[in-house]
Length: 184
Length: 177
Image 1 (tube, chains in turn cyan, blue):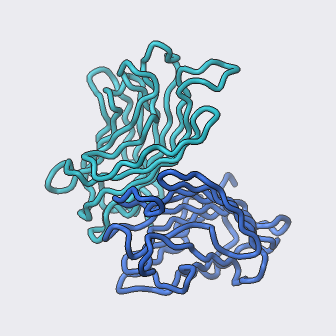
Image 2 (tube, one colour):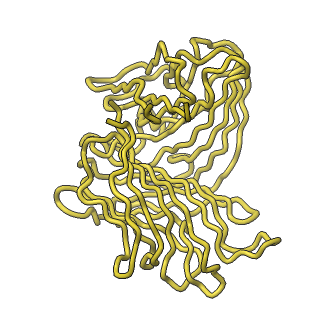
């Protein structure tokens, strides 16, 4: 059996607004989510948010903290850390449908959830993202960002559900594959 | 032939350990990927360096450059001769039960023509935004040896221990035949 396996691939069609891995098999060491996301919101670049679930349902308490370092156009940026929030956030990692957005642009994400099935550890995660939105060729302006973000969900229960969305609804054409990576 | 292969998984399952040691690494893959979920017992600290040695060498053959950030500072540092700044580990004052993450790739680790190089990224998550109580990092490194990598050994920089439930998994990655 392969070490890295595709668990689920979802292409968002009309009527779907988020990616939902439910249940999450407990047989892997890591879960990796790889995809592209465009928001149906009216802003330009917009954020990815996620929530985890355990056997008691979605974890919606103030237990999510996340931190990002980013290249934004021609500058570097430390996004203000977020602590004790009700969902995880990857700042400005998806394209939007703002008035300046290029309709064919779409944000990319790779999110890793480490040792998610270990009931003795909080769930730590990291992501690499890139988005090029509302840009003009030959210019460094626009919502163009590449970022390394990481965080923790202060809950040690085994993760049984992962929901990923944008801060607005996901637009049609967004997609995500969840991979499971084994350790034996 | 499978693309991703588990070479070895090590876990501090029954208590603290002084380090993780991957020995007799086969040379049959194209790349190595080391995935870490770590915490150490360094007291009065939120983070610590990892001291990473290749092929048992602690001599002045290492060079690393790290891009890292805290809450208000984004900076870079370079280190030559020593074998640290390859990654960070969460320490005793970080949020309880919280482990740092890191992924380190050793590209073309078995060739005997070029120096060995790696890239890594990771972070120390926390629920405290005070400067240097969390950290993101990206690192590139060079080991001035043309020998194939057959051993990866790492410990907390000050001789502390990795605490229980810390894990390290070494993968061998294949390209096309």
